[in-house]
Amino acid sequence: MHRRLRAPFYLVLAFLLTGGVHAQESSAAKSDLLEGHRLALLICSACHSVSADQPDPPILRPPALSFRSISKKPGATEQSLHSFILTTHSTVKMPFNMLNPQLDDDQAAAIVAYILSLKGRH
Ligand code: HEC
Image 1 (cartoon, rainbow, N blue to C red):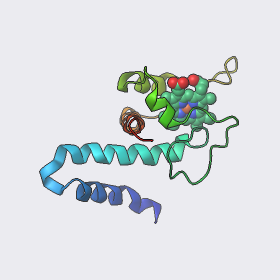
Image 2 (cartoon, rainbow, N blue to C red):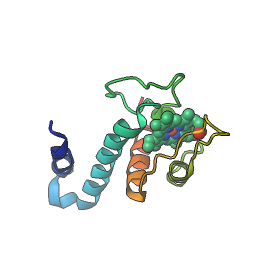
Image 3 (tube, rainbow, N blue to C red):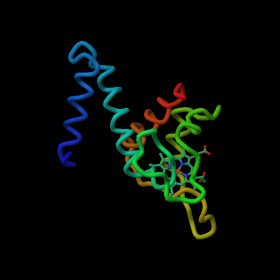
Image 4 (cartoon, rainbow, N blue to C red):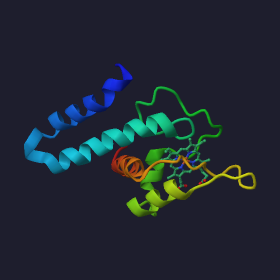
């Protein structure tokens, strides 16, 4: 599908999946998850295994922890993941720390919602 059409497509899909106007709140949550999934595939999948439908395995060897494993860590909360993602830095002294992916707050929130949604999955 053409890249420019994706965002509206996901919004419409989210709208349909959640039963349209009767579920506006959960429709917003659903589109957050879809956006988080999209961003994770785009930005994080070079180093993390982010989803079962990821087209290629991570390039990083060994790969960083999978998003499903991250979601299952006891300390993984919305707050802890959000602040990790927005503050982490790799530097010359700490080259193996994760780079700061330079996301804005909404993007980080969408990805965190997506990661936490993996928690119950097998
Ligand atoms: C260039 C490779 C790379 C990319 C791209 C990357 N990560 Fe990471 N990530 C790592 C490495 C390496 C670690 C482990 C070292 C660390 O904790 O800094 C890590 C750790 C993490 C952790 C902490 C895991 C734990 O142990 O609790 C989270 C959460 C995370 N990444 C989320 C993300 C998200 C979200 C993205 C995309 C926006 C992303 N990462 C993109 C390499 C990457």
